[in-house]
Image (cartoon, rainbow, N blue to C red; front, top):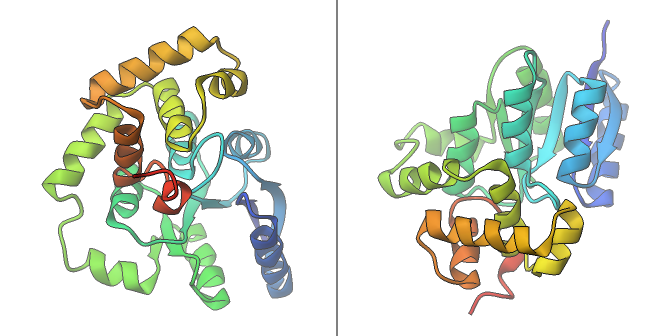
Length: 226
């Protein structure tokens, strides 16, 4: 019987090791790659073409939602993607649903739930943590305020979304320029374009927007917000 091939993407080694051990113990899965940041994840998916990707939302370089957006756009037959998050915030759930990602699990989910989710999405179904599935069944997916944030985010170019994430994570212009291999002046231009498009005026506003829109998780920047 064919094993389901899986890529694990999480910036915490201990989480990847735990999931790998769990899947290997089950025997029905083969972990063919691991990644610690979003850009590495994108490269691995494109080169290894797994059946399923277990993808953390709060990833450096590119967040998990941005990785999913790129993969689903680039590949004719993309893998099934399960998003992982420490939180079940509506902002993240709305984006995942809108993208067409196959599943969303909170990290508090049990081992049994994870293996069940991977098998379900591999079979072409959707799978959400029980608490999230219950909420999705009882409310509109995109209330107007989150719709506005999502529309504004989609107006940004991929590079502008990368700069937004790095600014919200506390990166200085020089650091961002080095990571993206662009000039500091180009970073400043992208940063200004982002603020103009989003109607924001300072870094704190960008950070609050990034958290509200699900670009980063609130835990990433809670020490920097006033």
